[in-house]
Image 1 (cartoon, rainbow, N blue to C red):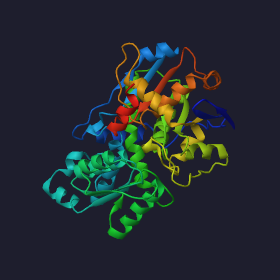
Image 2: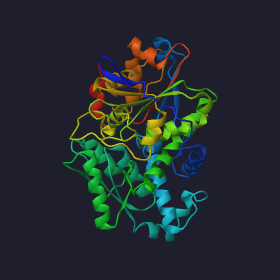
Image 3: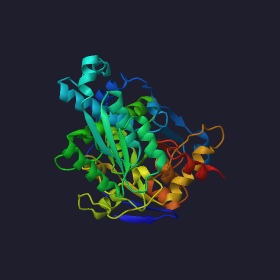
Image 4: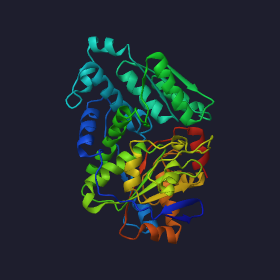
Length: 394
């Protein structure tokens, strides 16, 4: 393992990854999720934006950004995982086949009456809780959401507006808020819908990750035969990053991209897990602070950590200024590029790419050159509008 110090980030290289391609997050799992999502009201494929002006300025062949801000009107991608998990839970509850069932199967008065007696609960930094609340309401169920200390009121209100029965900002860090949600589920007979996993709690997080594969399958279709050479994936617990990486490493097994996992410097549990080089996941303790609220998670997801451990070649721990720089670059684009409104967590992957392009050694380590095709995901829009405006306005 080697660490390369950049101005505003640290890059972990020579990770020894690249096991044989293959993961459970494959084309079949993506097909099942996409089939279901297409039956939801408001489903539409989000845009894969080609930033040709940025690519020209940086001297690469292409920069592609998947813009998830319009997804289901939620300003983030998380509704994909929340809705698919709720769907799978309800299919199990009512004896429906998840490979053939559709949303319309839950719209009869009889089914609505059955769903009305079910309550879900989760902990969230914002977007996941909003996705679960929206999905629960969509199926006629109830939900309760717990948020960690420091969560902003706008994100709390957005979850309530999406349909949650209660949304409480606790005085706990993210991991302890998850523990609280789990305890409340057991005490009240609620169903925990959490986007991280641990021993004995794997099925629902797996369904959440499977839901994210709709986004990955859309990307594959939108690429139209173009193969990205480098993929930058921001991560909190690593659920989205592990799912997307697993899917792309399968479909591009013959010409696999270089994957870089991006986290805040203050809460980089995947980075330290990879650096430990013992195959195990490791947690960040205490109450770390970062503007990348959706990535402020201290413990890797047990389901996706093995995928990241075995497939990701680089890990990048970034200071907050890195994502701020990307938010500004996407808000004030080069040439005729389209404006992308990317929030603090949503811009992190692009931010790491931009930071690496400023450092010759880092750029060489990743092998980025004039033929490189860069893929990033803007996973959220301006979920904290006041802070977004403060950052992007010159």
